[in-house]
Structure formats: C-alpha cells, structure tokens
Length: 417
Image 1 (cartoon, helix red, strand yellow):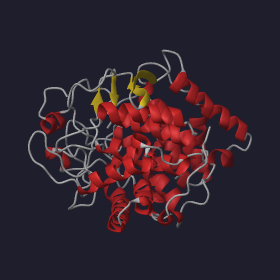
Image 2: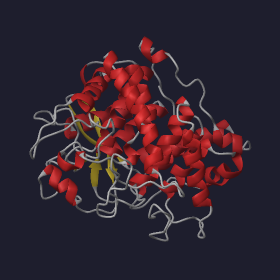
Image 3: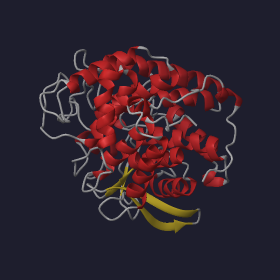
C-alpha cells in the first residue's frame, strides 16, 4: 500500500481498523515440485537496447543504488539500523515523506536484498518486521501491520495485502538462495505459515477481525483483509508471477493447485481492470475490474504505477498470459503519445492528466513494461530508466525502491529464486 501524500488513513481503512489514526552461501535446492517449469533465462533488455553498456556498468549501477538507499547519507538512504533484538541485528525501511515504516517498504527491502545476495541485510529487515509489525495473537495473528513508527508499532494500522505477498515471496526466495536457518530464520517455515494464513485464515467480523487475504469467493487478493476493505481489490496487488512460484513451493498439494488457479484469475483480471484504450488501471478496483470509486483511487495513482510491472514480469517469467504484451503495448503507446514529455504521473483511467509533474517511480515501472513490447517502443522507456540516478529528498522511498527493482528486472538480475 502506498498512500504517498496521505497524512492520515483513508476512511475505508479507519473503518477497517476501528481507530482514529491509523556474499552468497551455497544455495539449497528447491523442493522437487519447484524444479519443474522454472524460468530458464532472464532477459537483459537493457543490453539488447544499449549494447554499449557492459555487465560491469550494470553491476556498478546496481551497487550505486544499494549504497545510496541502504547505506547512503541522510538525504539518500531509506534503510536505518535499529536496536538489536534477541534474534539479532535489526533495521527498518523508512518512508521518509511520511516518517513511518510500512510493510510494503519492508518487504520490498527484503526482496531487493535477496536479489542482491545480501543475507545480513535481509535478516535485519526481516527481524524488525517480524518483531514489530507482525501480529502475535488474536484473529490477525500471522499478518503484519501496514504502518508503524520507527520506534516500533504502538498503533494498530491493519494489514495491507501487498506487504504479505512480498514477505512470503522474499522468504521463499531466501530459502532457495541461502538455505534455512533456525527459528525466525527458517525462511521456508516462515513463508509457509504466511501462505497458509493468507489463503485459509477464518473470516472474523468486528473491529479486531480478519479475513483471508485472498477472497475465497473471487480467488483474488483483497485490498485489506479486514471489514469492508476486503470487499474489493487493488490491481497492483495482483502478482501472478509470485503465485506461480507459490504453486510450486506451497507445502500442501491442494494449496499448490489453488495458487495456480489464483494466478490464472489474476492474469484474466488485468484485462478487466485495464482501460481498453489507455491500458491504465485504477488504484482500487472491484473484483470485476471496474474502478472502485473511493477518495480518488478510482484513478491511476501511485499504487497503479506497479500494475504493468506485475503483468509484464509474469509473462516474461512464465509465458502464460500472451495478452499481457498487448496491455504493455497499449500503455506505453499512451505514455509515448503524451503532449508533455516527460509525461505527468496521475491520470483518470481514460487518460486525462491530473497533474503536470513527472515521476521517477512511474518512469521506472514503465521500463519494466517494455519487456513485452517491440524494440522501437521499448527504447525510450529503458533509456529513461538508465538516465535516472538514485533519488534523494522527501519522496525517495517509493521512487527509489521502484527504480532499484526496475533496474534488476530490465537487466535480467531479478530472479525467481
């Protein structure tokens, strides 16, 4: 969940929570079910378009992103050390603009760390999230608060489904890349518990209740698994590339089958949620794909930057949604045709600009969508990404993470471990 300029929770979340505010070790082989039909190659689109850029250049750029965001000065870093816990060192990813810690950013930080092979940093972020954000008791046990303060989580800010999805996937990937440790660092056991909760948690009504993160009726990820916020979805939360991985790694055979079904449901959902002319998707949408009219989130806003990434990576990895190429082509043709370049970043889904400012996060996301289009259309979007520097300033958190992950994707370095 990215509510970039919100200083308080939207009313639907207030209702939901009932509150006023709301170097690598040897890899362990995956289980036998994970071995079949894994991606065998990861496309380096950047070098296809820019053969003058070397692998060493890419390594240096990625290392620069790491240094800036994870280790940089006060105007660039987003990852900060915290007090150690009995489980070891801890650190948190700060949403600098809102001065808080979000499950989205923590799970993205873990994903970047596992892709970059940085186990110590992965463990420190996971330790903080598990210690401060995870519900230990009650009907929400196993889920994570989407918003905390850097000192910890004194308030109950409800779960947000995208954080859980990235936590589970990053943990599964860590298990494959590094093997499992003990307790908190038994990555596979931690991931399996979260996958089970997301799919099977009983629905509980009331202020402190919880529902499954995936609607049993619709087979789709819900916006927030609490109250009325579980009655609609968010297109950018649909991650079939991850669900396909879960379908190979889940412990129970029946759950593997269900994750495979859910992946196919999400692939079809993208066509329903994307506007037929622009390819833009809303922040929030009904289960049938219609925009959810709620405080402006029926428009293409910050969450929606990521939707094209999701359908593009899924098709690039698994090749099970040929229609995704048409969606990327439609979307990038729309942005390439904007009168103002670089293009604005907020729109109605039918293409009316809602501001005049460009966004590095959107530019980065569109570069990932270029994985599915022909070279003449892809070139400018990939070059736009390469020209970007790691961001500084107030909004570096969201932009920086989207840029970092986009660079991993378009260089073939983001892998389904």
